[in-house]
Image (cartoon, rainbow, N blue to C red; front, side, top):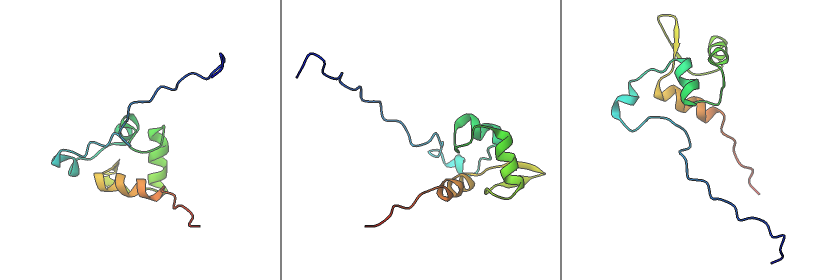
Length: 90
């Protein structure tokens, strides 16, 4: 190696793929508001307003409980699968 060798890279600590709190069985029955979804980064959106707009245009899976937009664990899974990219086969 020369004196100008590159620095060794730090290995980042492994993180969860998402912050989805699915471990307790109660999580299947919980409803998240758009504000909670953005705060916990459960979907790749940075604004609760964008989430609400997409729900009102029926672009995302959601529930309207009494006119309020909420997300179940199944809704979050289905929305995550919608954005998945299929690799090209050679």
